[in-house]
Length: 77
Image 1 (cartoon, rainbow, N blue to C red):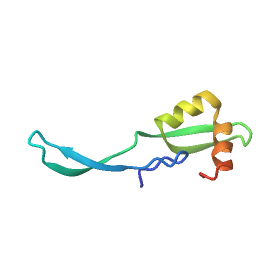
Image 2: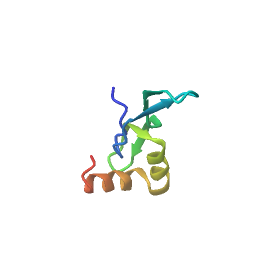
Image 3: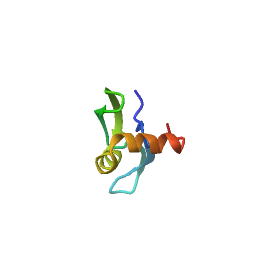
Image 4: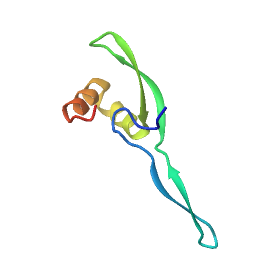
């Protein structure tokens, strides 16, 4: 499974490991993703999403239905 946030679309970035002698080797910076179940009261159902922790904070602040509607409206889902 890919390491991409279902809501925000955050994905891995590419960078370098830099040693003490300043040698550089490629590495990846992965987003902080959590698999979480959300209850949608309008549909009376549960959905499972893989979301970043920053998206979780947004969901806690605004509610799951508002966040999903916002991302659908902006075309991110």
